[in-house]
Image 1 (cartoon, rainbow, N blue to C red):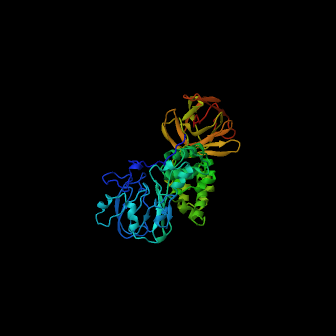
Image 2 (image 1 turned 90 degrees about the vertical axis):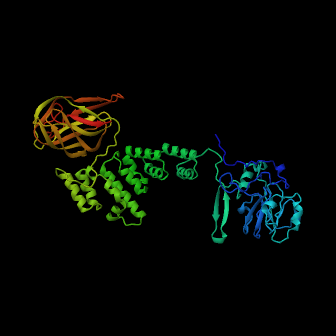
Image 3 (image 1 turned 120 degrees about the vertical axis):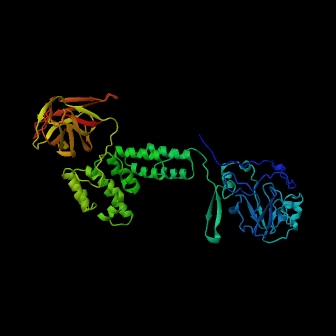
Length: 549
């Protein structure tokens, strides 16, 4: 589909044969110079431009319109509305009787109908407009001749495209021409400024967009209000959205006010946070975009990695602001975004090895965060402690015991059980048994440990309240813990409190089937070597695992 636009012709209300010089002023003019042009700008004039003239009435031959003007524009030629094929000569009028001279009296020749009209010396301009004479050519010699007289020829504006056999000729005609001009450039300075007409148009709806040109094309489409081209650019960006360019496209989407594209970029960052943060374009984003990302509850990465990425961005921003990358300047450029990093979600080891030694946080902030990690009840901190969760869909859980018994004691040793799964999941917490002595509060530390490396992948120092029943009570991690298929992990819970219920008749394999899709997630439990407070596959604590697929 091709869509040629904006090279439309001006249609006139009367035929050229009726545009006689002796036409009465009771008839409508074929070119009404007092009306706006087709694109809202002043319409092109078919009359020749006059050389410097005295104040007086000027009558356009095309419509017999009288205008009271001051000194006319001394400039003539294409920059003042002349067509590309206009001829400007300083030869006497007798050399070419078909081209009417323009004298200093202000009389103007209308080339649109190749006719002439004379201006009356009377103060009544309306009388002059109605007496355009067929003998006007005889009046021309009576004008005082001058060496500065200028001959200007204009092609007819009506149906001008019919006189051009090729697109090249039509473009050449429009070049530097007021006809259909919808934008003007002011070139030069001071008294030497020139007003140059130009045209904005698309000659096809076929467009080739690549990664190097899409953003400039989108900018142009926005600026000149071409929604079809804008939609084409946005669709291209959607199809080429990846983790390594998500931050760059997010910045552009916010700049160009494309909320749908911005939303897709944020979703991509949520799902691929680590890869997006590692991309080269991340450090080029602006502060507002950084804050928009750090505010989200759905980022799928550990908080310490967000901090490292934010420091990397601060290094780049300090250089852009020509500041030394000192801790003080990094804190300065981070501004309010620093408060969006959720330091309480880190482990005490992560915090001690990174943020506490960075110099970006104040001594007071470091001390309050260490207290938050180590004492109970936890003191208030100035940073958000709400967990992030990048997971969508329905929460799932499995129970590994089929019966509950009483009296499981605690002496500071952790209850531990080893497990693996058949597909990738995200563990968000455990279900634990509570007191057999009625309502009680427990302090608890939960962990998930990678068995082979003995690395703590997720943990939380928290507490829970129980009501004395044999039910399980939810204890959640600060953020989801990714569990990969066929990899061994250890679920660990260290409780401080009175004796509790415990589970018996445990199952080595437990399968969860999603009701909607039928997808099966199979857990396999094994004995965890070492101190485990007696918990095993058959008996003990940690009866439930809460997860998302």
